[in-house]
Image (cartoon, rainbow, N blue to C red):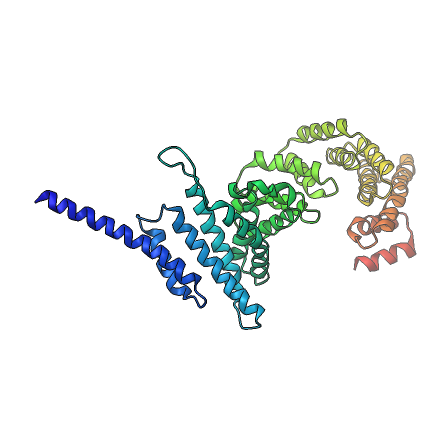
Length: 404
């Protein structure tokens, strides 16, 4: 009796497995028709994708991808014939097709009982994926412009990740795809908009070669590590940012601020020295060195390195501005330490020295104004104090109007 029952169970299992395999074939047949019933085809294949008898079969996932390919083809056929078509369905079918074909390839690469791999799906599926890959960008852009950033991230992320798929490895996309860094930048932006720090960290490195977005992607990556509390990695990214994007002051400013606020000025100075040892005439590193001396109130050294910065780049407006600021700070400190008694013989001498500091600061602020007239914060506050202390009436009135 038990043997009979066992045989019946086996027969039922075989029958059920056969039924599931039949559903996979039927789904493909329906999708292949001239007027396919995609709803029914998807219903059949979705059951097979979760059923224990067929979910680990590469052919099941191949058919799932094929159905999405056919959905895309029919929508594009409508577009060609100037009939109504669903743009988002076009893009989402490509995204789903990628997901299914990747899983198909993964299962097809599993060795059989003889230890051999017979992947009969890769060639055709990889060719289809390469053809449709640009639509991942289009889908991402459409969702990005709709401010649906979670959806946009899926498309941009899939485009970037596809460059590392084993089934597309022969294309060498990481090297040959010149658009990839820009797409990675948008993936990073979308990830930032939804607050996905892990995604920022994952996709930002691919964006660093993007001409316009690379520096911003690196900023977002640095911020992501900081928000995660990974100070060591944050500092590492800031240092890399200084090397990769020397014109962007975000990285050095944050690094210097960190060392200063954590009472580690020696580490900041050590880093500046390391950079100058490699590039002694690098204007940014000279500026950093001057800025550090500036913060340490070693004014003579700060002036020395700000002047070196200007020698290397005569149009470095920030160096002129800070040079003027150091001289004003010297004037203020000297004035605070000097006598205020007008009858004291040293009073006139002290006032002359204070005036000299302001006179020296004047041309530096005026040069900063000449170089960057729109950035008033670089020169207006300084010139206000200079003109006031030098009793330059018309000039002071003009600056006062600008300030107000």
